[in-house]
Image (cartoon, rainbow, N blue to C red; front, side):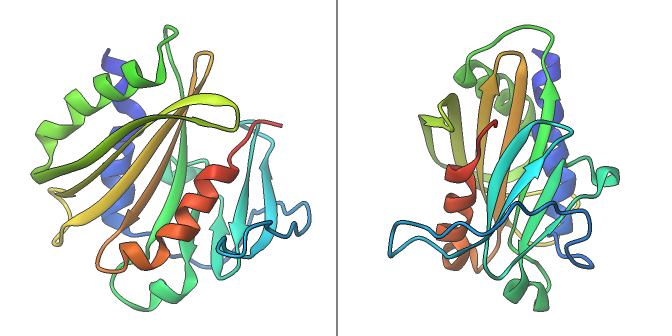
Length: 193
């Protein structure tokens, strides 16, 4: 399915950029909500995207930006990682599908079109899961993007709600594991109000 590549192809551009920007302009906090787990990152705010109808948690120490010119509905990056050449980041891309697919079908179609565009691909794992009560599929891999000098490590989760795909991508380099718990908490907090 040709359209399935849209959101994941956008990841090529966003991953190469590495996030990191000017601050939290455009975020719409709805208040702090403490996390229940002692190991989970502290939540700074609950963000709601009214345009695309989703919400997620922004952990403390992460900056949230809305910049439609990037193609992502929202981008978050770890402020501490922004000091180096690459800011570990999470972005959400929204794609309207021409037909209803399962999350796995979406991920399979997108991956079949994305993988040939990458260099040095090392697929780490794939999983079917549920995020915010919706079916989802994830893929984790390392690769080098043609426009990026260094390899990146990515965790992508496609959450499907009818014919709408929400592709949540965590991208990192050497500090991927350092910010992984925060990124996974962002993904786990994703919901449609």
